[in-house]
Amino acid sequence: MHRELFFNLEKEAGQIRNQIVAVGKYQGKPGQINFKVKHLPPFHARAEIIQALEQLSTWLDRAVNLPVTIKAGIFHHQFLYLHPFEDGNGRVCRTLTALIYLKGGYAINRYFVLDDYYDLDRTAYSNALHSADAYEKTQWLEYFSQGVRYSLQSALVKTKNALKTLSFKDRPTPRENQVLKLVTAANGLTSTDLATSLKVTRQQAHHLLRALVRKGLILRHGSTKSSYYTLN
View 1 (tube, rainbow, N blue to C red):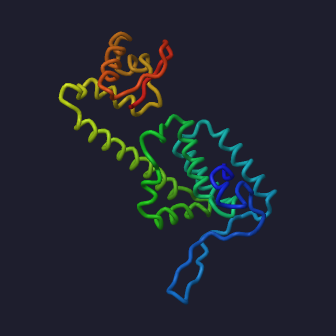
View 2: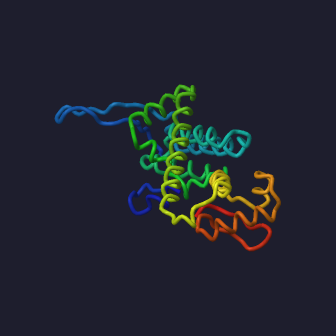
View 3: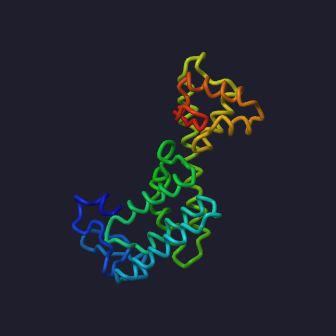
């Protein structure tokens, strides 16, 4: 993935580092600039870093019972803690974190972008991230989870604002609003799911979903009994 993201920018694209690096930032006045170290990654040899990444990948595969946000937060920190590349670790980590959410059923690519929250205050993000370097991850995971909440709330506000622009006849009924909330929370809602959630018949569920498709608020995927619906 690092190679694909940086293939035309860096000659080391795709290469696990094989040297010591320090994570920090330059600060100070002109002529008095110094580098403040915030983190020294634990491994320096390429073979050690590869082994640590394989262990992280194995843990990720086995952590099936962890909530997605907690699993993504732990992975996000551990990947950056290892700092496997000389540069570009942040972008690769954000992409992999998004993939974890997608696999966990969060349609992160359609409805919200986590970077919107973390970019509000990069210092707060950095401080929270490195608070977990000493193996106590509570502060980081609380901050990370707040980012998901903020992003979901922002997506909901955008959806509500979009609904206000609809003509009166195209605005959803209270019952259809219930359906929209269920579709938003799910990564693909079926008519069976809807019938179960609202305690209605399959025929009634189909009617509600068809009405929202006609209004352009949701999309139908597939044309058989296995079809499902997502937000438009």
